[in-house]
Image (cartoon, rainbow, N blue to C red; front, side, top):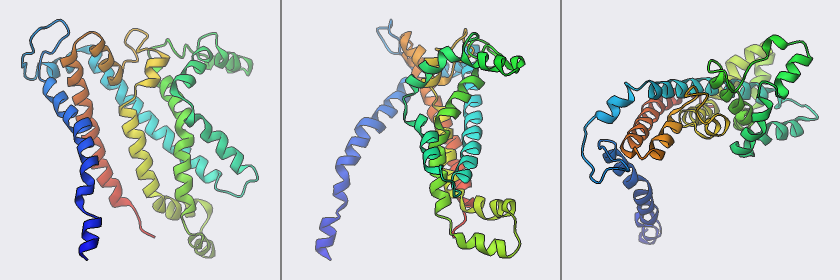
Length: 290
């Protein structure tokens, strides 16, 4: 008994705990402190300025637009990725001869760099690009738009590209969830006269909640922290139309306004925490055990 205690001592956690504290907890606390200061590149002293940085965030039109764009991106991508991924997973869980090839095709974009995807799609999404050319050729010219320069649709364009790239990743998680559901439930439902839709609603969805929980949390946190897609596709433009919190943080640090940058970063951390934890607790209560 005493040997077991020595082998699995809690002291074994100390190296990992030390690394976690030094490289995550400590920088987070230091960043929290600097978010309440006027820390700037051109300032020789750092003064405590209370809530000034946070007041500026909620009074500056560009910063408010960035918060609005971040929320739009998060909501659209959470819904788009998860709804499409569930439909794909259900379809590719059937006995199709090509299902393995189709799974690989749909999953492939998620392992390609966002930078590469964005660089490939940029010329395709221009006004004279491939997408508008295809729409014109098939008689859908009324759908032709300035996908990357129209401020009214720019966030939907970026969201659509993210949905296209990562739906396959979410699909893989849903497929794993579907394959863990016992076929006995469907056999019993069929004997009772249940149809496909009834089986999907009353068997598949309830037993798929753990996978839904994981995917919603992943897509939500990823959506709130969006940066790469916006930075590569538009750089926050046209004007400031596609600025998000991530690009605002980069711009603040680039301008030497480090106090404001850490304040925006702190706000993002608080928002992710306050949204994710209650949602996670709510969704875990909805999970059904087989």
